[in-house]
Length: 91
Image (cartoon, rainbow, N blue to C red):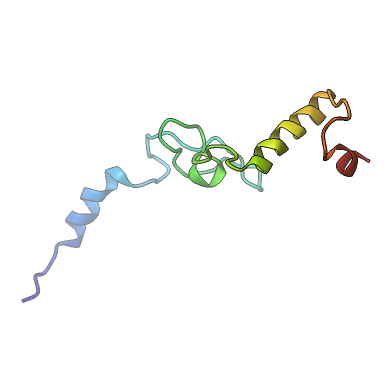
């Protein structure tokens, strides 16, 4: 047998857990393509939501880790010519 549910009561009970504009939890600090702040909740213990890198644990493959080291070296101008990708990417 079907029970009739009071929808207004259910709506009121759920108001405290919604992610509306008055939600008091921590929001993502990333900026969107429009230049506004992201409205998603931040991952627990992080400053970004899951879509902006909050769940990221960094590169896991050898190639990914090598790429991070290489990009850091390019940005810091510490390239000494020993990196195998240096000639192909920098010319």
